[in-house]
Image 1 (cartoon, each protein chain N blue to C red):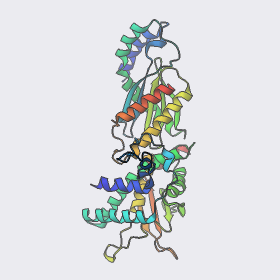
Image 2 (image 1 turned 90 degrees about the vertical axis):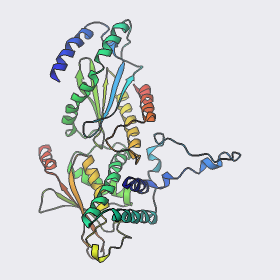
Image 3 (image 1 turned 45 degrees about the horizontal axis):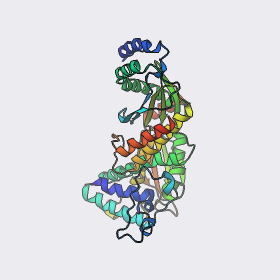
Image 4 (image 1 turned 135 degrees about the vertical axis):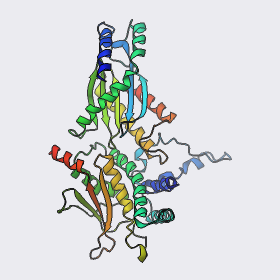
Length: 223
Length: 172
């Protein structure tokens, strides 16, 4: 149920172009009655094949709006809706982590928090949205909080939020992606999305990453 | 776990004493372990290029090999502790040889998503094992990208198995 929605979402976010069958197969045997199907095993496709592939923002916005409508019917409450979006983003994030680390040849594993956050801020955002995130900050009040901000998040661009659900933030999807990446690298944390509009950027979203205590203890030991 | 090790080491020293010590098990045991210490894929790979030839010790070695096959899982499991120790001190993915048991070495490779690839083998070149691990990591990512594949679940695809064995034949 929700898995099929996220199945298609994963395809579109990573690369919709790759999911279409290769056109070459059709023209290679003009005499045959049946068009040749593309039956390449996924284990034989090269991982870099869709490296620079882009998906149109219209297609993504359409898909995302469908995801929202789909989850809206199955939840009661804003918290629940944000949690479901978080879960959908989680499924994307797990796959994004391994794939992006692999695509950066000679890449190393991240063992420090700051390195990990920098990786998310630059590489992940660039692969997902075509540009780096706009800022990476450490909270001054709490030791374990970090913030990544995006001035114009693509996920919320075409979503209009009615007054009665004004607390909803569709950035929960991005928060799910970040949470999956942090979890995968063994930095368990709670990740949430908040809207903090500033001049000129009414949709500015901040992703707040609150690290678990064990991560902080480990950071202390590694210093 | 300690009791098992001591009993097998007394048996193992029996194998290790003669000149046929090295030829006893040209098979490598490869296992992929998920984030919850659950094995998601295991394979016993017959390697063609062992370091020394196994001549004359065939009959004895086969019997001994059958006896100790079940130990592979224990050996791999105890090697997980070593992996976790080394995990935070280095940011490399390929952790080379991390443990030794009787005559066999255990090499480890840690992926970005914290999946551990372990290989129990006899003496082999590091480069060969590194290439094999890289191949298996690529195959794992391709499996992971399948939206129907639940992360941390068992990989039962026959195509995956065939590719791993092919890669083992090429590198090991």
